[in-house]
Image (cartoon, rainbow, N blue to C red; front, side, top):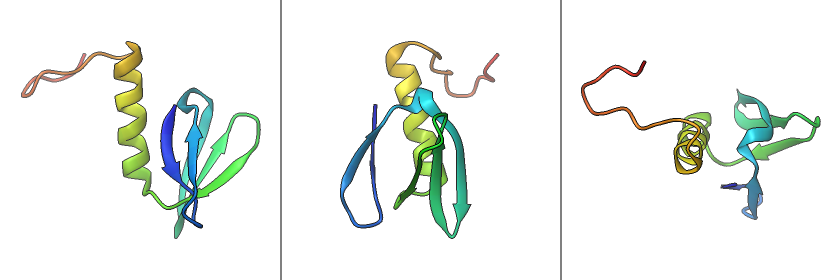
Length: 71
């Protein structure tokens, strides 16, 4: 799970495995595979970074070494 913030400031834990789309329409809108949409404070770049870190923590992707291209 990743921690994000709704526009009103409340915390929301999202399962990144269920994220289907992230839109930037001046606000960030995350759509899950079940159709639920959430408007968030974080930018798409921040959310993408948190998703990548989550995938690394659970072992879905490895960490690329600095200076090396990922396969």
